[in-house]
Image 1 (cartoon, rainbow, N blue to C red):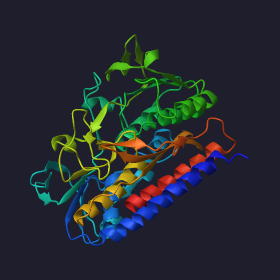
Image 2: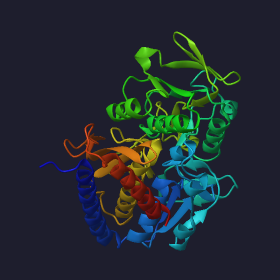
Image 3: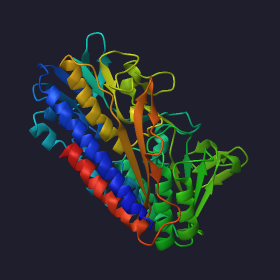
Image 4: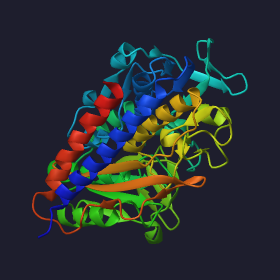
Length: 428
């Protein structure tokens, strides 16, 4: 008798959650003895917020400061549902009131620079904040100019919407205003970038919008890669649900974009050009500029870290988590950032208590909607191995290609439950 894939996934995730909870309780008991010290966290996304809340829980004697310029965090997970007209952007916003109420000092300002020697952070306001340990979770920045023609002003006509908020709303508006029969073009960069399956979830939900609201229209995806996360699952869904509304072209099928023209919404590839009525450019990315300026990013534009404590290999006393860090094969995802934030907080508490960091196993699950009520997922489990991470063989997997009725709907329900859980854990 076979077990439904959705039940297997639930059981696996429950086991991982139980393992993490046991480790957390053990670490809490050890960390209580940490002497009063100052920990500063830059960035209030899933990584930074989770680190702040965990530190207050496991080591209340530590003075924790969170630096974040935005009053409300706009979450990227589920923002593709906004693009597809299935969710309001207001549902993506989360404040920092609960974090402040827990005893974290929340500073609403930009972190302008880091001085690793002086162990201080200078804010846009000109004030400085000193630290004993620094956790940097700044997210990504766009590599302006890495794609020829795509500069800072290009986002007005060719939105990337890869930082949720105004760009998400703009892309949604452009889709809504496009005439039926128009062409939508999306370009996808080479890896690495934030949320590897994200472009293909977005493609699915845009195709659904076109199918239901503008049936004479079509989406063409130009991809710099021939392979991508959950490719068989996405392509199966596209063939079943959107055969007339979505065309994907990989690198070997002239999908690599070499230049764009924002004025004409034109994409140039090696062998041709394509003009769009709505153009979505997902551009090359790197760690946020604060990380580049602090000298914690290498020549790849990302931040190398030691895999047990996530301490920078370039600057001691600074820990990097979330999308900015190099943690392959672990993907750059909100699930991973949340897990890294918790583990990093525990390791920092151990450092400050005079103890060595303890290796931990981390899990990641990426859910992707292929239709409003259908989703697929990939699960990975990772552990430190030498100076890097390795995936634990046989511990993860993807949704099965062949599945019983209701399986994709069950995964969509799991995705919604995960989003509610992770935002509550991070922001309260």
